[in-house]
Amino acid sequence: MGPFPSKLEEITNEMAKEKLLSIDSIEGYGGYNATEVYHCLRKPDTSVFEEERRMLDHVATKYGHLNSKQLEDLSHYEAPYIGTELRKEIPYELAFYRGTDFSDL
Image 1: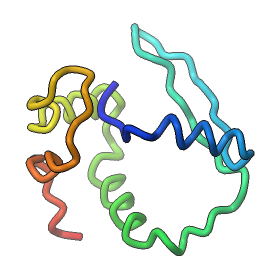
Image 2: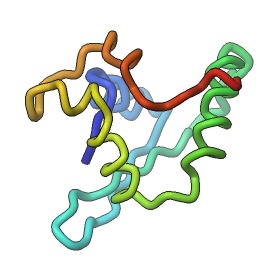
Image 3: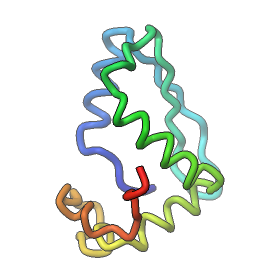
């Protein structure tokens, strides 16, 4: 119900096939799609993701209190979503036109 990486399904399916990841589906409610929940089946080497981890921690702190509908609405009010045709790939470069400020990282 919002933007996601274009290769997400391809990568996660390959990881599941290689027994690196399990994918569970939780039924949606109120007309929403089912939620996919990912579980690592092998301990990952997270040391290569230090910068990404800092960003994820920041995002979780900033948005972790919001529910899925609130996150969906938030993403749909930003320029990249508004400026892209419905259900089309959002060009990566449009991320620089978001209203979110991450300068405090």
